[in-house]
Length: 312
Image (cartoon, rainbow, N blue to C red):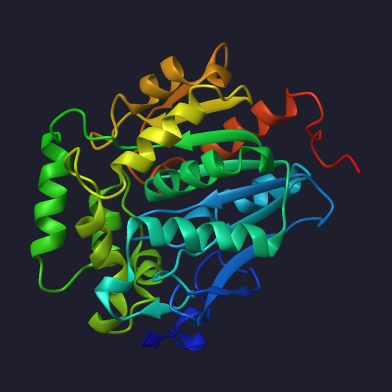
């Protein structure tokens, strides 16, 4: 497997990014190993929050949330999916499959060995993280989903999704930072857009984000749909607390919050919210507000840490 690794200096001096890199090696699936990057902040013995990004972002998406979670007494882990951020980047598109991404993320969870996890999942982070949860529900204590879903393609793609796939698959130069601009209600400054471009110094580094639109299920017969249907059977029996916190300006995932609320038992009677002014990348538009919603919800749960302390 041909693998690229973004030079470390690409990540020097990024705004609001003081976090030291952590790495584990996971099986690639072809007998080699892949290095996977993650952020790990807060007391190691504190309850863990795992934050999963999507397309075409990396752990930088959670930079506004990490300090809020840590100050509330949590340990925060935010991995970069393979092909993104500081994680290794296979160059062959065939190396990337929906099932393969699930396997890589599952291997990361096993490597970092966290349990009783609160999962915070966005976009493809939900498509992958909920599959990991369905395969190993005992690892998770709570779930927060934001601007995501778990597709089974039982209805035609909405106009926004169709336009996104046509754009992302057909464009010659994939603009990672430009995609962030398209998916926010605010105007991220140029240095923030540059931080989203940092993992991709050349086009050949972008196989990961280029591949997600190709492997996304679009019809009921596509790879991943059968496995997602099986995962929904687990979610429909899931009793752990399950919160939806979506932006009000994300046409890509509008209505998916109600699907979770109706189908997941643990979502009943939870204080679900729609955050005003939140686009698809709600962590950019309303990051601190989203973090406050999550921490207050966690602090209201039995066994969750109160602000500034944690249970041993």
